[in-house]
Length: 316
Image (cartoon, rainbow, N blue to C red; front, side, top):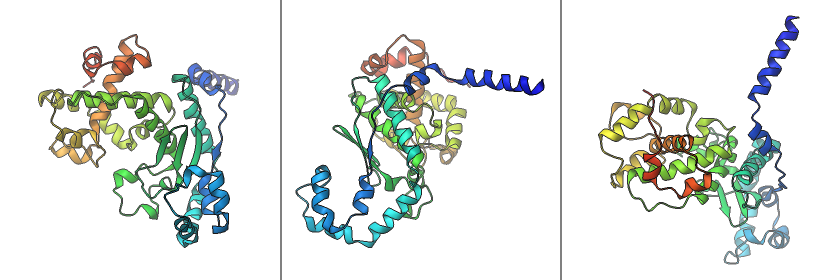
């Protein structure tokens, strides 16, 4: 009898956790095909170059001579790179599912967006992990080999923390979100954090099942710090009269990617970088919670209007 009660309880809990909206989004049909150009190129010989150029013309600019591609194909490091990528992405099914889920969420919230072609590639610029270009999304797999990978030695830790394959759907969502939010002409600190807050809000909709820390580019400990100190951060912004300041130095202190935010206090080293973007998201989320506004309407609202009607008040 006890076993039956436990089983019934598990069923009830499972049903309670099932999100009807997520179930609806998961049923959206997406014709997804991911072309592994990284495997094709890294495994190719110089004799394959003509066929590669014919099949993938977008990756072979006419300004680059064939000799450059031949030299790259013969480079022993290319074979090693392929082996390292294959070790991490031997089973590509989880990545395929994650990418499909992001595209389904995009289709739900932005139905006019056509499903793009997806290509996996490699890059020499670790800052270009995901690129949205016209009707394509390029994913540089060599930037997702794991935070402890030897290739990333010398890169700052706060950047390398995002070099894991769990970040692929988050990075796609991030790039898409930035493509949907018009650059702000509001040069105030408030205008800038609300701009990033809109981006973060869209991202949270597109990858709702990703760890919250990953959505901000934070570790879970950094996210806990942000939550625990949210009221104090907001008080600091108010007391220092930063909201309507146009001081561009605030970007590096509280908005841009960095090892930590700069309050010029002892707590700085414990804080995550870009804490202003975190606060901006909380303001936007509070605004959406307290106002009957569509996602598309949100994108057209000014920072001051969002702030004034957000009823944002972090708990102490």
